Length: 238
Image 1 (cartoon, rainbow, N blue to C red):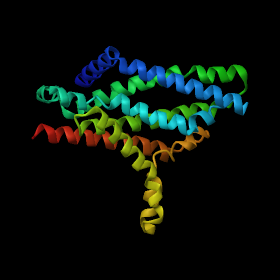
Image 2 (cartoon, rainbow, N blue to C red; image 1 turned 90 degrees about the vertical axis):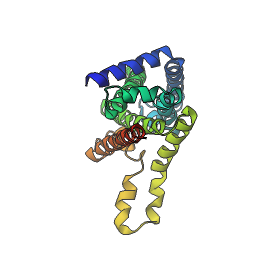
Image 3 (cartoon, rainbow, N blue to C red; image 1 turned 60 degrees about the vertical axis):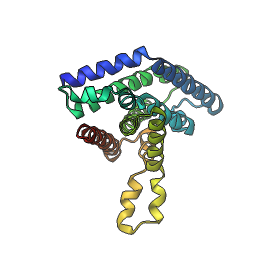
């Protein structure tokens, strides 16, 4: 774990020295705050459900996750520092986990900064705290899965923009996979209907915590971290 911690700290320092994290955080807070204000004004309802389920907030979460991860491995490849990293006494999975934890830490700080929203709701109304907490849990799990997808996309290319587009593409494929339900046999229908990445998020926002949804997001995260490790392993033996 010492290597993982070192790599995570190194990446966090890179985030702090780069304007990317600050710009992304500022835009993220501005968009979420503006969306919250508009929805609260028109709905006159003390709830975060509409904010968390709104297409703008979900789309923006996808964009934020890919921007945070697009440089993690792509930039290392472009600068030629990945080879130096891989030849050092560090395992491939330690590189992947360290970089992933750094991006996750930045994302969690951004989510934490939106804590003023539920505080405001508690002051102006009487919202149901349960759905707010479960909604935040689902939001974090969804974000963690999207970050792992972004890290995988960053591992297969040297170009940051290509990595971001690829990550968004993979996310869209996972989202639209449910449309294949009518094209597959009965035996595959359950699998196909289980795949859409955003379908597992709606229950959290409604206050329902189902283990199958938690398992789904943890599985997606683990799968793409594993694939990222395999890509690095293949690169090591080229």
